[in-house]
Length: 228
Image 1 (cartoon, one colour):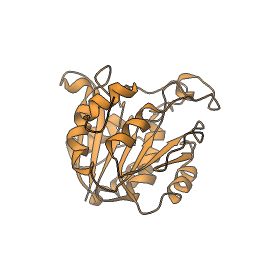
Image 2: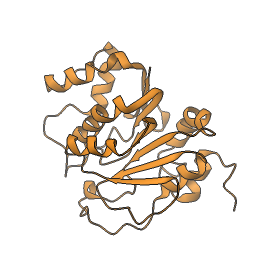
Image 3: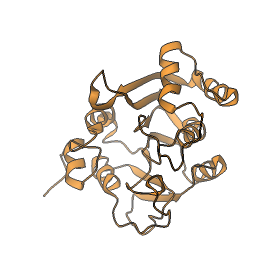
Image 4: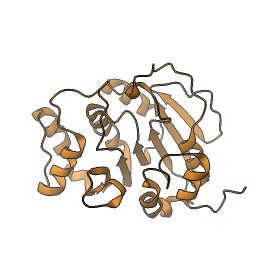
């Protein structure tokens, strides 16, 4: 079956990604946002490459056997360099346009080191990693500055945080970005984190926070930030 001209939702369903019609339906939004990039030679980064990692109580050194969304992105962006970042090992996957970076998002220094291994900046970033609030926030503070002008940064699964990782009392990432949408200023329980996020505001041209399944009565699920 040829996947050359499939839209993103069909590709997600083809490869068994939960981003498609069977669960989250993220690809409906992504196809609208990402389609202009499809024929371009972009740098694309996805964090979190396979469900069932340490956020679900599974050892980070688990056996990994598939990369559904990476296969999807490689087909969707035929000229892109696709980068994957995860705490588990996916170095076995080989493709001429794919690079793997192993990283623990508890440590901002590790995230920064991983970014040093990506040349030329990034055009699109999708954070589908552990969904722990401090991991999402660590990643944004380190990676958003690496986006090229006009780039898009996406954070998924805002409404769920894993008990195995979530820090007590931390401002949830959904609330953090909702504070910016509502007040044009980030509010956080940690003043230092609030200051770090607010320092990035001049580089942000837009931010939207989308509810689950696009239903306004549902909880916030996805944030999309556009860089100036």
